[in-house]
Image (cartoon, rainbow, N blue to C red; front, side, top):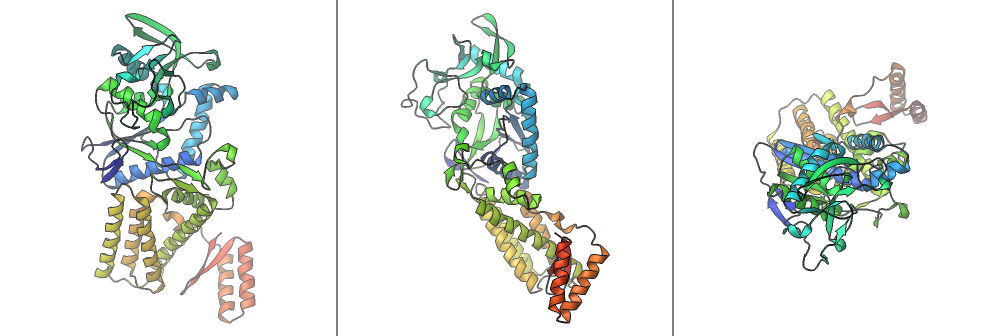
Length: 487
């Protein structure tokens, strides 16, 4: 298994810390609003990584935080006249519903960071004791960047030329490389924070200090990892926008406390653009899953969600994705065609009398597909190439079905192949073959239509077809039979 490690900027063979389990952490959402499609693209990428590792028989344990206290959550909860916990729980629930719609497997542990205050306090106290952190005159505790000699490692910052000034501090949760400075671990309370504070005790210069404080953003993920995984993890993930400062600061905090390498591998997904432009509310191209549901209200939800997921998978995870409605609509057609193929395979199994065993040629063809699929999967999660293998397999099946080349055991094997693909892709719905019972009057209309068609009374046949459509049933004709299904 090869992985493109952000930390080393190189392709490396994946070697977990332990053969017993693989520890995977990914940053969760900041729950001050709905997750947007860039967030969701990143969560799909992370889901692909976890599904792939599990498919390859690794025992993967996953943890994700929920940022329910930071500058944004406090600001927007106050603006909404809601207490912080109620406000963030509302958006947390919406987020969990959204990722489940996209067939994203929730993390084993989903942790609101407000439950991690004791862990944060312990880590900050350790950094104070080791002179990595200090209490400043504004009442906040800051991390002293100069005390961590490897601060440049992840973000590849040149500490000699980054403009770091002695004594420079940054109190904001988010900033860029142009503002490298000592960052806040524990923020002093201010009136605009309202009731959002914790009274915690620290020992500084031999004296106990108790102030109204709240955590900075970066310490939250470090504390979450420390509680659930300890000092070291195998893989840390999120989008490229968090490489600096968030992930760089996580490393500085955690390694200052543990004196061990925090994460062995770092994986980051690329930017998501919309129609070739940066997504922004001011550009009117800012979309949430809710917006797509409203736009495609006439599309069956399960089809839409799988088409959205497929759209996020069509580009390599660490490359830029250009989101367009044309691509969504194209992928809706792809999902519908896969659904029809699954239905056709099952109907052929039910109606075919070809019970011959699996031929050697078919078996070798299947082995070729799975071998190529595995090759690309283990090549740094190259999902676009894996999808190409599946599309070639679909072409092979459509031709074989049309020409009646496959036996029932071979058709069953084809379904198993789709299930193999789906362990990672999660875009195939095998329940499409489970349909409600067709009423007898609808079946009678189908029989009358088929009789009219056989007697070349096409006007009557079309009239019955239109009548069925008005009753929300469509006729599907194959070479050997016709059937109706609910629209």
